[in-house]
Image 1 (cartoon, one colour):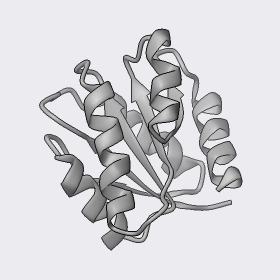
Image 2 (cartoon, rainbow, N blue to C red; image 1 turned 45 degrees about the vertical axis):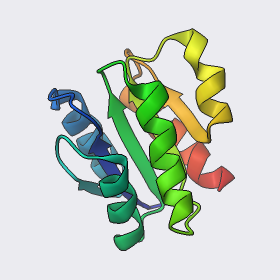
Image 3 (tube, rainbow, N blue to C red; image 1 turned 135 degrees about the vertical axis):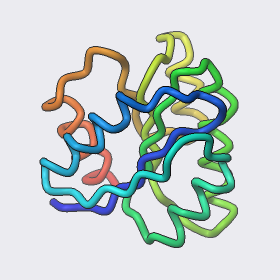
Length: 129
């Protein structure tokens, strides 16, 4: 299944090597990938997701702000009347996983995930939607 996927860096985290690798992995798996760039706000990501009519949003979170920013992205997407799944990738401690899921995050990919695991997790989220 091919999908339109928006990937974004939310907040002040300026490290984008990983998200570019993930974008390429998803593109090579047949998805159309839109990268919004660095320093996005939750509002900017939500607006782009709705404007671009994407099937999934992927957030790269390395700054430790995942508990604040990721739920805000979900909230902003819902406020725009959309039901787009959000997947978080990056540095996320295990003890935060349940709270992120409760806040509407569809899945979390942590460091060390292989290309195959990334593609499989995205496919599972898309299939569930």
